[in-house]
Length: 475
Image 1 (tube, rainbow, N blue to C red):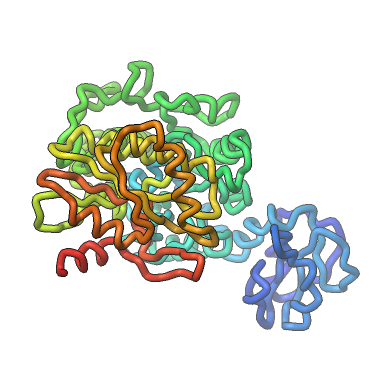
Image 2 (cartoon, rainbow, N blue to C red; image 1 turned 60 degrees about the vertical axis):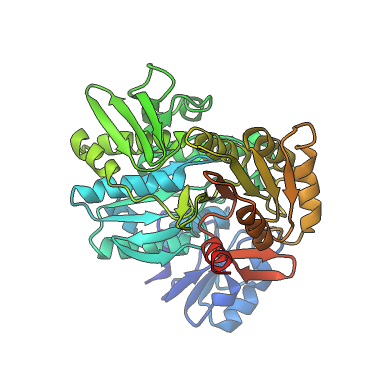
């Protein structure tokens, strides 16, 4: 592809020589003969510093923000913001051939995207999915490194979806991806909002930055589906030109309402009330399952899917790995794995389990290292207030001392009388909880979810809680 084609639609501040481009990248390690290298300035590395080295390595040109005095440079105002467009042009703008459905919010994105995909597929549509657990093209599964991939991988996935005959792409859109411009230039057919609570402040620094990052999705969608029960539900779309519809459980003033909700050990039931009334049965337990399925239903209905087909598809949902996942143990107690790693996420899952628990709720949890430290005492307090017993352990400590993270968690538990045990090693913490379980207890393993690794100060190790549980039971 010609360089001029790749730069189409991008304001260039200085004339450049056209050339044939074989690949594009912002990663200096991936540059090869015929590459276009985009110089992006990050927190610890500035691509401009290796521009000449990339030319020597075989790059035909470099995209820069400043004049480097090079014959092969293409100057733009902001390399990070145009990288998404460069990648889209390189792959032939495949997203224009898909109906994009983007979900953002603190909790519920993964389950809701899977539900939307299943509803659409139930009516014969071929659907792609991009998210935290995995990426999918129809039923083909691809590993996911980030919730929302970098622009090159993202556009490559769109291209593969189009080639496979997909009509829709349902994707989680993270606040970091929005802030970093990974989805710049994309137009979403529908943008959906789940909820907004404290998370990722280690990256965004302030709540306002976090909120504004999420809002970017709705600046670039035709229709917004929003949670009327969340205080930010209408603020997130305020003064934006997109059409808005709402869903709610606690108010009648929404376009789609859940009424007469019943919580069961094997799922939830409710009446979906709009200009019709339909009885929904979702085989995923927990109050948040009402919100997730209601959001998915609202999206599907606004895509023109008949409400009877929507209700039928929700009833067949298989759930998502690491989201209120019941692990088979053949014991008189229950072990559940859930990805809850924020204060609101932890509160939601424990509260939901309390509604169905016959015995104690025992919560095994920790907090991630090198992340927002203010979450730790809040999560400690929530776990202590809502659980019958807590086992405080390690999560992904990363470069931090696990005992220091645990100390921060315990600070929030001091004024609560709930008994707890500290077991720093996560495998041993799970073993302790299982060995001390009583009949009808629910043991919640919170924080890791779908992850099959643990990031320690010494490096990353394989750690799949399902395998850990099986090993403990075997011994």
